[in-house]
Image 1 (cartoon, helix red, strand yellow):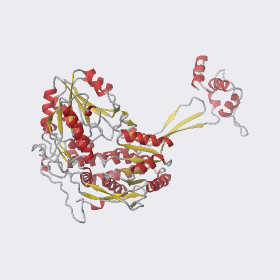
Image 2: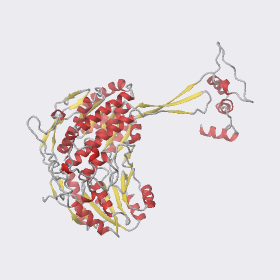
Image 3: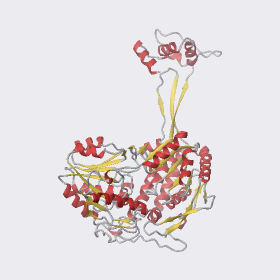
Amino acid sequence: MGMIRLSARSARRLAPSTPLRTATRATARAGVTAGMRGIRTAAPFPTTTARVGVPKYARGVSHQPKTSAENPLGLNDPSLFKQQAWVDGKWVDASSGKTFEVTDPATGKVLGTAPDMDKDDVSRAVDVAEKAFKSFRHTTPGDRQKMLLRLHKEFIDNAEDIARLIVWENGKSWSDAYGEALYAASYVQWFAGEAVRTYGDVVPSAIAGQRNIVIKQPIGVCALLVPWNFPAGMPARKLAPVIATGCTCVVKVPAETPYTNFAIAELIRRAGVPDGVVNIVSTHENLTEVGKELTENPKVRKVSFTGSTRVGKMLAAQSASTLKKLSLELGGNAPCIIFDDADIPTAVAGTIATKFRGSGQTCVCANRIYVHESIYDEFADKLAAKVKEFKVGNGFDDGVTHGPLITEKAAEKVQSHLDDALKRGAKVLAGGKREGNMFEPTVLRDVPEDCLIAHDETFGPIAALIPFKDEQHVVDLANDTRVGLAGYFFSKDSDRIWRVAEALEVGMVGANTGAISQAQIPFGGVLESGSSKEGGYQGTEEYLNTKKSTAEVADLVPYLSRDGAPEWPTSTSTSTFTVSRAAQQIKEDSNMHWIYHTLDHLNPLGDSTTDEGRQEVVAGN
């Protein structure tokens, strides 16, 4: 297959040792890769899509790992390459001794093996997590914050090796993988701050003499089922709030990318997180029974899953037997709308960022790209020109912007979507070729509204351009789906920006940008794209129970007397007349009588005790 090459300017690479705050200049309009935008999203860079870049001294840097028999993956720290699961602070194999092979999607080469654990192995890990929770829940927020800050430092110090593992087992380009390593670190840093922000509340009482206190408590043992498309980012986004809130967990890693997860376990150990708090298990042949164990085991109080809508529905059904709290981040079918008043270079750069990151294998990738008919030809030509500069290949190779798809099956699905669009009249403007798992970034024009791409998530590097005429029509098309994770649009009209952002039935909107994910924001969708949020302070709340405690203050009522109110007895050394005893005496007459007299006698102001107010209280109770 002929390889698409980047221009000299856009082929510059980011050296891993580059200080984050210096890697901020070059042009997105020169064909910056989606992977480069991953770096910017994770680091404290400006949020505009105008200019992103690479220092001059990063040109021509090779990222080929120096492998050897003792260091088969060429890591700076070979001890990060683990081929065992992590349970109760120990590296363990499956009790059966079975393993499965892990391969490089770019070459098909076997990288090593991982334990093929079964239901009993996972049940033991849950028991370990439950035992650890009994003590870890009582650690102070400050102590947990320190653990996460140490873990953040471990991520930064080992970012190169995390990136190498991602390239080896996931196939991403180097810049994309390194960007993900920093992105993962940003979640650890964010939730380190959240560890000391699990605030409670004081709620005024409707009954005099009582105090309502609201506190937040860790929910308990959590099952975290993480995907293969972000081998570092997704574990970090789920693990960090677990540690921050005082919970414990069992992480089920994907069979495609276990090694990045195992390396994270080693970083967690180095950061001083107590044994048993985080347990990481792997499986391949026993996937169904392991999933069932994690969702039906009553010791597990919460399940967090990122993956397909189909599997998410199965896990939700299984979790219903014990009414677990769920965080589901499921499939998407993101629309991207280019309005007639859009800035074309910004729209092109933003579309590339949202469509081609990770070779299109992200849940928030634009899947349907609607372009106004008045600018359709101009936009299509300029987008195709940039995409033609991309280079597909092994993520370690110099100049490669996009790696392979994760499996042959994934490539076949993308091919079926391409074939369907071509049969229905679409034309290829760029790319369109495939060799094994390697699929060229592709731009299609004249794509009809009824093709597979418009109704099924492609999860691959095809930008399908669909023309439209007016705003209402395109919003209706964008909302014509059962999922609603993310949506994007480009316009210079400020009124339209707010109007369309509110009209799109999605959980996240990108207006004039294709980069929407960051640790500080609530990430998640609506409809069949799932429930709950990850990241932001909302991501912390997902791992906490809210508890209300009402306490009664004895002998407070005498201070609340007013003209016309009944005389209340004062307490003596032998008799204490409390509010609850007064209420109990009145309640003996009837429930209704108790409600009225509670309002009359225990409300120090009495302003809401009219007949109308009483009716409202009775109706509300």
